[in-house]
Structure formats: C-alpha cells, structure tokens
Image 1 (cartoon, rainbow, N blue to C red):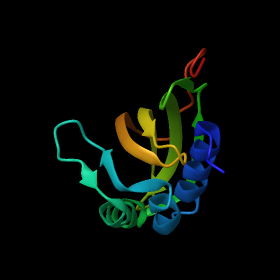
Image 2 (spheres, one colour):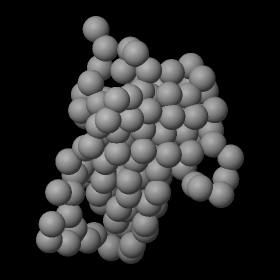
Image 3 (tube, one colour):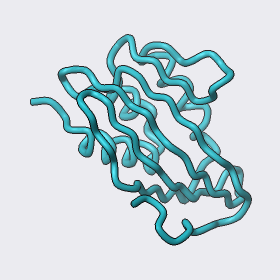
Length: 130
C-alpha cells in the first residue's frame, strides 16, 4: 500500500519532532534528491539524506511543526510549513515551503524547500496556510 502525501507529511513531521534521521531517510526513495538550499547541491540518496538530518537535528529541541493545506496535482505536492524549535538553546522560528514529488509507492523522489529564519518563537500571520 502506498503512502498518500498527507500520510507522508505526517510521518515527516514525526521524524523531525523525534529527531529521527532513520525515520526521515525511510520516507525517501533510494535515489531521491533533497534540495535544502537553492544555491547548494542537493543531497542525493537515502544515506546522504540521513547524514544531513543527523547533523542538522542534533542540536534541536522542543520542535513543533505544522502544515498549511497541501496542494497535490498528480505526483507533486506543495505545502507551507511552520516550525518553532530551540537550536543550541536559542528559540527560533522557521517558515517554509516544500515542493515534493512522489513515486508510485508514495516515497519522496524529490524535495525542494525554501525557508525563512527568525529569532524567537513567532506565530503565523492571519490567513497563513490557507
């Protein structure tokens, strides 16, 4: 049975909140690409994605993540996300967008994200995620 985009997003949230790089990597196809920054090379393959996740989540705590309403057309899904966390004890807010492509099994083949950083714990503006 393949995972729906909503199920995938829920599993991704759990992996981040639990800071579980193995659970995160398992959501991607073997040859997936994960573009975290638009000007840097993408991470390619599960092992590279797992290593990235282990590194970036190591200092994170108190992670809370929510999504706006996903838009899915065919194999592609776009969704806004909002995350508050503590990074090395400093509270921060990340607001971003995922652009996702899925394979027939519901695993992510391609993730591109664009995000913004703010110090402190912020709430989304009115109408966010609609």
